[in-house]
Image 1 (cartoon, rainbow, N blue to C red):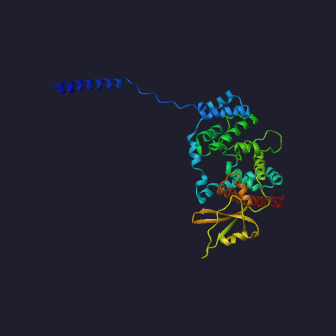
Image 2 (image 1 turned 120 degrees about the vertical axis):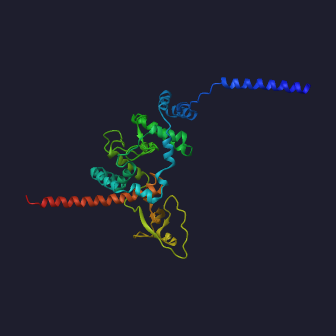
Image 3 (image 1 turned 180 degrees about the horizontal axis):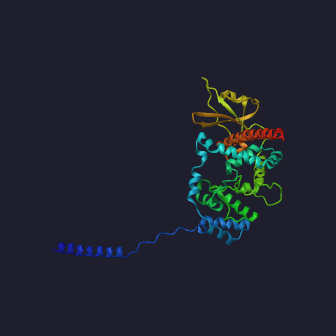
Length: 359
């Protein structure tokens, strides 16, 4: 009897408890969605602002206001994870070496022939290489980037952990550049990586290597092609460009029974052409046997393609470290040079024909 009474009391107590929980659940309002912390209030950004204030004497309020208007862009993070350079060579090559880019390169060369001659003479860098760089980087100034540089560098500097340190350093350089050149950092556009102008210089390169063509105004690689041309030439000269030296040569790999595996290539040319013969690599055109080169292996549509890369091809990689980029610049420069010389020949013939016509 006592046990039965205890069971009844427990059931009554449990029922009331469940009713209470149900009422509590009904009366509880759904929690509001947590708002993300604004960029300028995030710990890393606050630390960055404080560093800029203490080390470079920026105004705290001014920087805070800039970051209030700065946005993190997911599109930028997606683009940096899927760069063109990850494509195989036969696809990458087709993207940059097109008839349209060659034709526009010839037009650019004719339009800026005086500036290109000046840069080639002063810095020892071929006009064709300068034109090809501008062609690859910005399609001769037509595509200089759709992203605000402050958004690009902040997105990568604070949200892209793989290379955050590098992009934060570039963000520092960008803010210093804007202060020096009286540029509005909220109105400057560039690539998804924060590169600026016709030559697509990163801010640190802009500050260090951008030069003024005629000293008549502040250096401007965004709106003045003359400054862009001289700045590219200055960059390559500073990185060791060797005047009138070979850049790359097509090569072939001879298959033999005793084929030795190709050695791992160092970041700079290390082997003489004579040494490379033991790996059965031979240039398709004559070159001095003592010349230093590396083997460049590219993925062709039907199999591997081989080149010998000399010192100057690795100077091009100082602009972009990917060897496919350097090879695209080189091949485009060769195509533009050939087309430009051809156009000069036709102009010369047309000029003589016009003179020879009877009046």
